[in-house]
Image 1 (cartoon, rainbow, N blue to C red):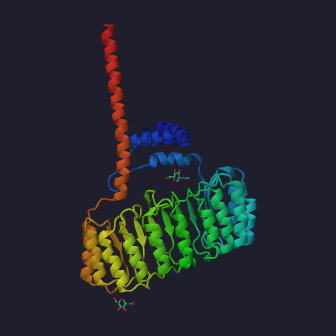
Image 2: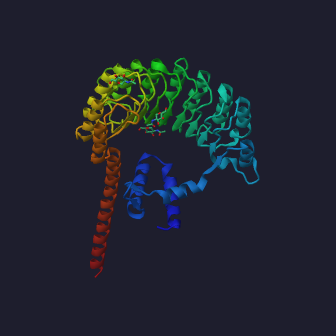
Image 3: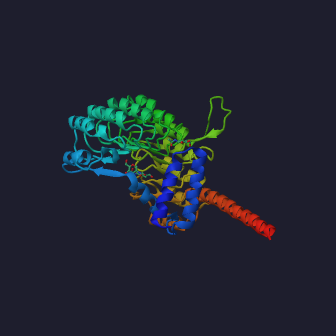
Length: 432
Ligand SMILES: *[C@@H]1O[C@H](CO)[C@@H](O)[C@H](O)[C@H]1NC(C)=O
Ligand SMILES: *[C@@H]1O[C@H](CO)[C@@H](O)[C@H](O)[C@H]1NC(C)=O
Ligand SMILES: *[C@@H]1O[C@H](CO)[C@@H](O)[C@H](O)[C@H]1NC(C)=O
């Protein structure tokens, strides 16, 4: 198809996308068929090359402003310049500009309050503090809480004080998909406030709270809430002084199956978390035992794909070995990180056996910096991963869904053409 045809298809899809669910289903089917017949397929990565479509979609409205040096002048030019159109700016990157509370307050009122189409805002690595964040929140809340999809306020010292506005934004921003609060000195004291907002974050897909001081109590509170979020698939809790109690809460809440109502009569449900980062915490033997066992729960952890457990140096040999042997029965997890864990040769051999074991879901282990592991064991694990032929479950699932829809429509199409041909033939013969 040429670019012109593409353009009209895009317009049509755009229109249809804003419609309701059955129409969305039809649209995705049309898209599948279009991709099947008109778009090239990348055999190496087993993906359709979506570029032709996405290029046109993004070319239509997206205008980004990446501001680094002299960022205030650049921002001013982008928002107030001669041919600037602040309403068309959808993405703003102000990361690493050493903005303090005062500058952030000015920027919020002068510029951000004009950006009514903003979907993505990166403020990482400034120093806006609770006051700067409060001003920014008010600007975001009054202009673009309806469009905002991604927000990164990592490394800004917003402290527990700032979590009140975070919670309000989580309630208001109905499209927020991704929120990063990495390195903000958050403690369990502020987490109940954050959780009040999180409970409403039904659109949230990714939540990163790494490098704070959540501890066992904070981690447990967060897990209790995120387990009920329908779209949350990524959770970053690394570097948070989480110990055994926190790990046990995570194992119970995130990885084990639960009945989905209080009477215990409902269906078994699980969180949607696919990716969980618990690296560089203080999880010990009891925590590793609980996590290893929970990962064997067939009903509970159907979504989980990757867990990073690296650098939990409080864990001893019994915890590591338990985790490694439990991997023979893991039900969904395909990849695990265990770097800097002082792994023993025995545990690496157990992991290699799990990778070879068709009954285990494990396919990949990352394990840098474990100097005690014998070379033969490393070689065996590398070989096992190399030869691993377990299907990629995500890809298989996606393929399955796409192909089924496409097959349905193609056969419906062929059937329709057949009927038309039949009727036409009858019409012609009756005219004769
Ligand atoms: C979140 O997930 C639910 C159910 O899976 C879905 O119906 C809903 O549209 C999603 N919400 C957003 C904002 O993506
Ligand atoms: C987990 O977090 C640490 C830092 O906190 C990071 O270095 C690591 O790459 C993360 N793991 C994954 C799998 O991304
Ligand atoms: C690594 O584990 C072994 C036991 O498997 C222990 O003897 C050794 O002290 C540990 N090393 C470090 C650096 O913790």
